Length: 323
Image (cartoon, rainbow, N blue to C red; front, side, top):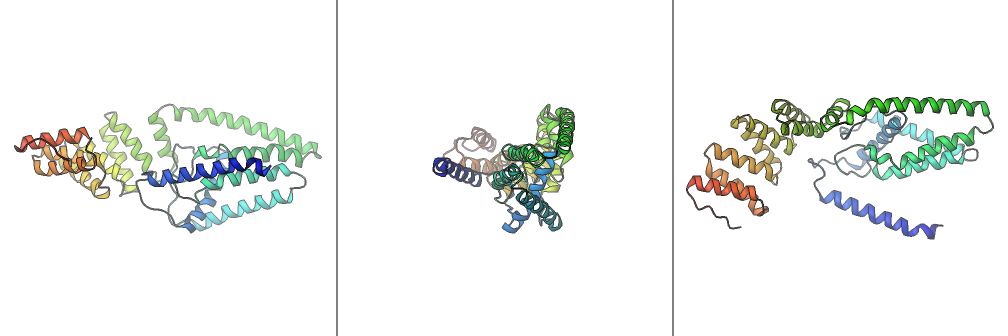
């Protein structure tokens, strides 16, 4: 059996390696902060508990859950670890009477481990999609494990069935109540910021949606909240600057673009936005420098080429660009 499945294990290892390589080589996070190994280990214990809680009662579902703050809450991590240990000991002790409980529990614990946070990838703490496969293990443990463990206790078995039926009815009602929160982009983002704390990314995404829909004042409030949570968020600085520029406040837009570039010199969108603001302020040489910086790294950027030509024309210089 092991020999038969060996090729599948090899494919799994290759898939994991490709995923890690892709994530680490791309800008999956606006922040370079990475918790140390001991912190990730403690976080992973809390993540297991969070997944278990959402499995039994899907409260506070969101499109993105922010990373837990450093340093880890030692008490919360120890409580989560104790809960996991108690469940593990229990299913091992029941191995002879209810083997499916152990199979399901270790299925859950094992398949969830790579995405439990022990390996730091991206900018989220947990993700509901990561439970698709591990959840099968919990269902095996509950359905078959309880059936095996209570097969000689028909009254308890029927009681467990009634409880399960009530649980499913309750979950159905909760799911129906949650549907409006997923009906459109704005509802989805507003739900995320309502049920999570310090979620800079979702405040930014909500702000960007509002900005694109001409709700500039509301967008500014969201960008400012994102920056209160994470002052190093280059994209939020850029979009805050753009919102001020749309309102015609160039003096407030300028420092936002400059901060975005200082935090991320390769934020070409911020450089081009800064270039346009500088043109409006008749600071043509400075605008030329920003557009040229973009074209040196991304010579195919038409907007930067257009901005450069316009700034040079207004300055009275040749409009051509040679990389």
